[in-house]
Image 1 (cartoon, rainbow, N blue to C red):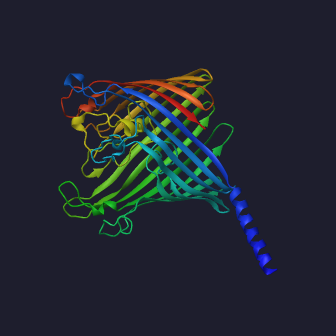
Image 2: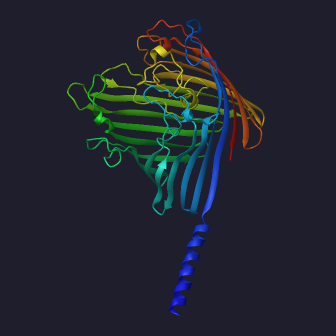
Image 3: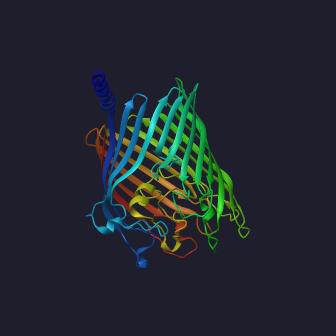
Length: 453
């Protein structure tokens, strides 16, 4: 009899665990896009210099998000990019490694699976916990965010206190423990980031929105192992950030803005190189007004340039996520797929964006006005005019040029849309630097099919 009860108990436990496993819900979401592009020139030189390259190709990405919902308060959040690649056959050359030093792209985009996100999301009685690999540097508005960049291991804790939600976070930006890397012969060579801040949400009959401020301390020790040469020296860096933001909606008008300020010190571990103070500022203000089928808007942005050898004033950028134009400072398309558009004589591998039209906003005073019309629910046509000038001209001209973009998006179904766009860049003389190069304008034509679910 005891054996029978033992067998029955074992069967009961198996059934109980099986029921728990079968109770897990799975929620899918994602996006697939296929995009074609023609770019008139891949550098800024005039064709009379005998250097007039153009490029045209197709590329795609399938991004799949999967939430494994164990219970209403517990889930595993994952995301994977599948077949993120240009359209071409699979060959050995497609898997050549990316050369970060020389910023050469080749065909290193033929990855079939790139798993970016996996973390536990647990809503406990004392707050929300998130632990695992997730998007990094995401706060407030899109300004300064880097969610399209590398993901990192993080621990986040959100706790509501009245109308305020406090955020506490830790991120491991660089792990150089001897048991992991094995190549370093020094202690304390990691890069850790500590973050804390409040978020306040408000709502009234006249307005609704939110505001907050994030405080970050980055303890950067990974460069303490640099060799002492004519161009490098070992250093540690203490860097502090203050990032206030707001979002608000007043009737038909939506506004948002953010300021990022960084300060600290780069302490070189040799008396041969003077320490440097960090003092960097960026700001962004954006507004849109919707009047039925018509909408208008505009943006202002500032990213401090650096022309002081005793200070680091360009420690911050506009981030990777805000792409205001089809060419100018379009980080997603150009940095990922095409490569830098610049005057090759001024392109420096250690400062790839300094004289590049594309990429993250750096050293810039930027303004944009835009308008769109939706004559039928399925069709939206838009136009924008953008102008940029350098905060520091480095001895040349500060005019970075202006750009006109025209786009049209048609919703084939609720989940499937097609976009056609044309962008024309009037190149500014800033990209001459102190050279006498002849520059030329550039334009891009692109079309994009997007399926979202």
